[in-house]
Length: 375
Image (tube, rainbow, N blue to C red; front, top):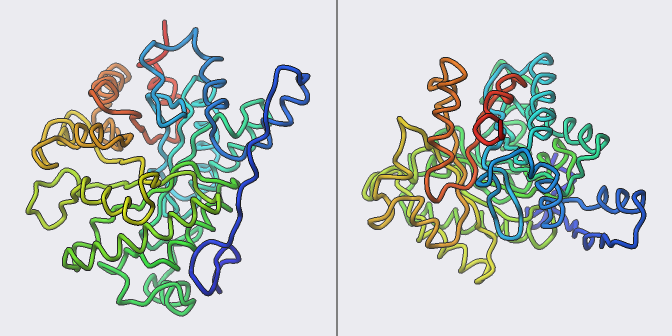
């Protein structure tokens, strides 16, 4: 069955145009302001500024970064690692709560992380945060789609599962699935978006990434790849128009770190031009995510983008950059001091917006916050 959130004819998300954000004025009493804040269903300029204003006295001057009119923290919480079980879900909920309490308002997921359980844990954490006075419009929520995934637990026969839930459901044919695990077909992306919105419990996802699109280049020539990317951008631009996402991005592993000529290489300027063809000058391709740490410095140092580093190219093109693997999935953090040193190296690279650190441990969130919180 195609998700209820998908238009079965076009494969795009059904129209769910967001209401204009409620206007919050000084003439409102506290109860009216809180009601209005709770009804802003995406991160907003006023909401993210309000969040950081509350933390201004306790964080460093370089902690707040800017994505358009949004205010983002220099460190964000990722949710990739750890087993898909109830205990880990509870830990992630506590980690999100602690992150938001300490001044980090960026939360990152992917629908495949922990078989959709990371998104669902984050959704519960956001609802708890709202009850504690942290409004939805104060938090930047990002997730990703592209890989084939499971629901809750891994099935005994993954290929049979994909045959039933993707191919037989009409979301994509096997000829649209690369490397047996990756898909950019419009109907598949629309279905994944609808599921992610339901998992997260949000009307609008603030940043929606195509997840490791360079995986397609394992099997496709570049013209075919670019045609698939154009079709994916068309889905995402419709989703923006409908209010299902606020903006979109490219979350990669190899693509922007590989040199020109490498099979997996992605050319950021080429992809921005493609987004402009689809969405015009005000297209929604606004964010890039890729690994950056002391042992993987290519984003800051390697001239992979027409003679520039990825960070320099993104700056020139007006895109915000988030780093994944900011402490190499814990490998650069044998102790708290090493963790902070590694994270500080990453978050202070010129041109980087937010350094993401995946952890399900509130105590690790506490340690990591030491790079931006004043003593």
